[in-house]
Length: 358
Image 1 (cartoon, rainbow, N blue to C red):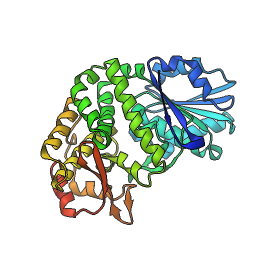
Image 2: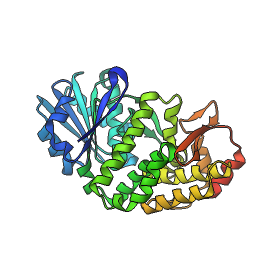
Image 3: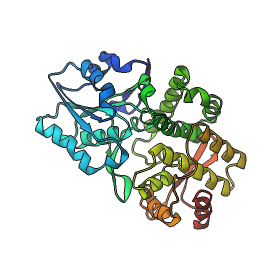
């Protein structure tokens, strides 16, 4: 079992990474606040792992809230069903919420915890690769709106993150690949050696090699934990973690969160960011090629599954959270392993970039 820490003063917390983490009841018990628990999961994960979590709990009151599965359900309406469960079962401020699922479950559970009685404890138990390396770490919680992704939410840190690598063996291949997009992101923005390691080990990762998986998750979490510790509420350096996301979120919004997974949209977004960086004269064409080859090696798309209107994409990008004073801020690459924030770019450059994919 590997243990990392997100260092945030009195709100610091551990990330546990390893095989059979869900079966180690002492880990979960250590971080439960009070004697009441609400487990939030979804219809896909519940049959697989809910009983393991319930068996590990030794508290007076346990309630389960099972949500529908899918990004299209990451809404205020679905969020309200979590509040319904809490209120109908008379949960108090001494309740701990457990998010058992992927990024959608984790984001909504965290947001519910931030809101319920002005804040209760919660624990992240991520069951997808994407959530283990990204969304469960750092305290970003939110729901989507028809006009924009993750536009309604809060920064709210968990008590702990428990990432059981064994659960990835029941993950559909497409979902696993979607998670690899976020792993690749860390190499692109912060660690050229890690990116090279991913190039060399892509086959092992796609075959779910235990050692390769553990290292990829650990290194990804190390990079994110370090950035979050330096900039919890995304005032500066944490914004670099949005590499590919402004483009990706726009694609998801235009597609109404259907027909494409978050990681797939981010993969396309990262390639667009690489193209834009090359057009701006920073990234070498050979580096763009390496990005594209690694994405394809991980079975990730490099273009949307259907034709999308370029103007719709641009409009959706302007509704992104990262728009400041009417100025769109993008994460671009100076090289593989080094990213920067850029808002001073021409519309022509953006048009040329979008034309490479749309």
